[in-house]
Image 1 (cartoon, helix red, strand yellow):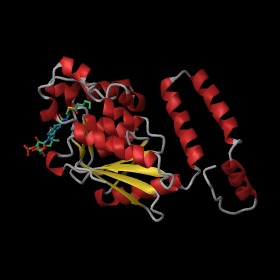
Image 2 (cartoon, protein in one colour):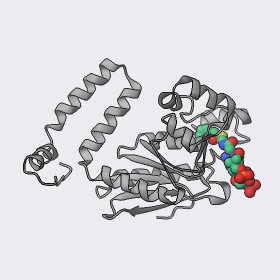
Image 3 (cartoon, helix red, strand yellow):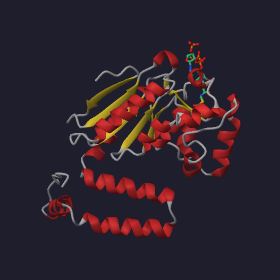
Image 4 (cartoon, protein in one colour):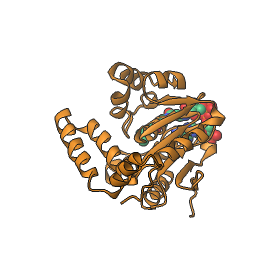
Length: 260
Ligand code: HXC
């Protein structure tokens, strides 16, 4: 693949983990349109590759991503934003069906924090710094910062982060529930790939259904969510993987899922 701003590979013992590394180190991985187009293409490719069970997105030690590219958007007009559907390519990330994990070292600011929050799980390195500094440059978050943050950390902390632009360190981010675990920087990617491998050992069907159900909780009432979950639970019994999973339990052996 001919990517300019990212590196795409497969990793893990069984080469079943898709790995996207953001690769604009000189600009702290600022997310320009070209980079996000490439992320979208890579995700579509991995999502439709049956040998891939889970996907990891990472940056480098200094930055996951320091935000949308300020230099690229500085002269945008409202008409250009609307006419060109600015940020449309970002929605590919949140519509990925396979489990998607962010491994965040260094800065995850603005669009970088939003990109991490579009992932299903965030693991962080000890020096990670999260924030929504848009307010300091005359804009507001535009890719979920005012919407996803409040759903994971609550109103007071979300308001403080969005209204001050202050950075949150990895330890505080873990305490407030924005990230699920923190590791020494040099252990982060390895631990994230291990998590991805654990998830990838499940049936891809049930992973996709489980992910969809959890996401429905963010978008619906409890009653609607419970109804959807129960029917999707029923649907699991239509799969071979359910028969295999339960047979393996009864026979005291490891399940061999075939994604059928
Ligand atoms: C374009 C960026 C950039 C960005 C850093 N760079 N962040 N370029 N867009 N978001 C570039 C710098 O211009 C500089 O280029 C190089 O990367 C290194 O950055 P420095 O500032 O010299 O590094 P440092 O002093 O270590 O400071 C790190 C930093 C700072 C605190 C992260 O770079 C910073 O504040 N960046 C902007 C953070 C931000 O405001 N993000 C939100 C963007 S708005 P040169 O050429 O000078 O070497 C946003 C909107 C989202 O994300 C809306 C929806 C997507």
